[in-house]
Image (cartoon, rainbow, N blue to C red; front, side, top):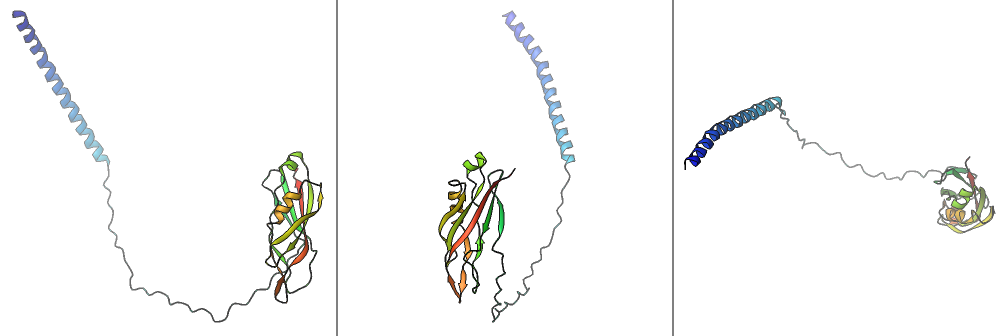
Length: 201
């Protein structure tokens, strides 16, 4: 009985100073946090946004609608274009270029000659490019009344069997302003286009 009383008494004597010590430690931590918060609060500057007045101009008059002119603008003359054009078109494939030129076969002096509007460069055949093969291909076709291409066919290609397919596919995408005779568009047969395939050194 006496030993247990002594244990309780010793425990109480030890516990009281520990509790008081913990109380002071917590008190100092709390006061330190408040000081830090006050310091942080002092660092933040007050931001003042000035009041701005937004003016809305409701009374502004809209400009009056301009009447359409009674006379249409004069038609512009079609510029003369040299049909022996030589377009150096660099292909997307590396180290390859393709020349696209059109010959003047089937041309005459009518009301308006056919003019190329869209000319697409052919894709350099991968097999020919990897083997270092260069050459040319002449494709003949008919320019229709609406300016599209009909019946493209290779007529002279060197080397044979290499560039025909790529040249015909490119020619099919060509677009023209059709030839006009007496105010009517007409077809033009025998139009030739030469595709030159060269590897850049």
